[in-house]
Length: 476
Ligand code: NAD
Image (tube, rainbow, N blue to C red):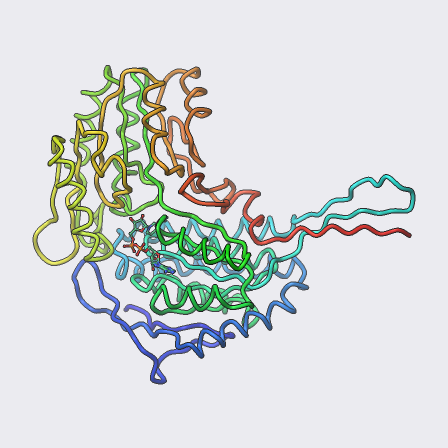
């Protein structure tokens, strides 16, 4: 059974009552599975007022009380992971094991924030003058507006909510209308865990209309967005004009550098499932593969064999390793990258087209020997497509990897510590993962540089975007 969808405002789950609604589709079948209520302008104002009211008491709550709520959310998420995961597969498409895995990993995020919110320390600065005490206090910024996407509907939302409420902020969050069940489930988890009314509010609607309304409100002090670079720049610009803080987790185009001296079979074994996880709709998905000449043939042969073996199907089927694309509009978008690459001379080695029949299914695709200016090598494909090219020297690979405006995740495989060091210091990226896939853990910072964003989620940095620094000096 797919759950009933609602808004969550001031501790109340709301739907119907003449609100505008939109269809929610199952991307594997094309069927409408639910109706999602949109927030009216009055609903948005009610959510803002509730968040503002709740902030007055939540900012004074003890970190122990906040920690207790987050711990309870973690426990409940683990208990409910199967149901939440099933609904997520129905509206987002990813295989059930990935959906359940996402919920379980997010329970870790809630636990991590429960622990770390008790350690938001200020400091004492030794004074120049006797009798003066100088303190640095960290205070919650206030009401936050958050916008989260459809590719990891549970993960992207819980990271923002846990950081905000752990820091003592309150939040109005607009989740992904395409895949809404996970965010409604999250509201229920926080509600059941005893979060006071108004601290978290969930709204839905036309994204640009909702963000316009929320960002413009004087109540909102901070914006947090995960999504495309283009939208992120628009929202960051609006926030900047009003001098509001923002955290932006935007798109990437992750390079993978595979050196001659790497364990090629091990690299292929890790990279194939990682490339096609969530049908490649992942901001840290490996997308541009730079492989050194001596390893090229072996790497390509292994990768193509792996891609051809990926079982594509409905995410609810037990043997499915890759589900459909999350929306029908993505099918044409992904196909256009392949057409463009082929028109510029690339060789198609696997897949290359949508899979005929119902649902947004796309074959796992591998292209080789692409020209440097093909769209696949310059724009984020956000789909199950890998482009593989060769390089001669490491300097050349680093120059090509750094040539784009993106700087989110990056990967490298090498047997030499000298290469590893040159790569980790040479790559322009917020995250570098060498000889394994080790990103997006709750205890490690996640974030990009250049066009890929501002700020980090996770790790000790997780609360930075939600805290003001106040300096107090006092003469006794
Ligand atoms: P899109 O740019 O239209 O939307 C991306 C996300 O932003 C969606 O969740 C959408 O609801 C939201 N959004 C769009 N306009 C908004 C606005 N004015 N205010 C607030 N939110 C808004 O693209 P799409 O077709 O949904 O997704 C495809 C592209 O989005 C991909 O190419 C990828 O680059 C990017 N994307 C990135 C991530 C990520 O994790 N960084 C997640 C999802 C999508």
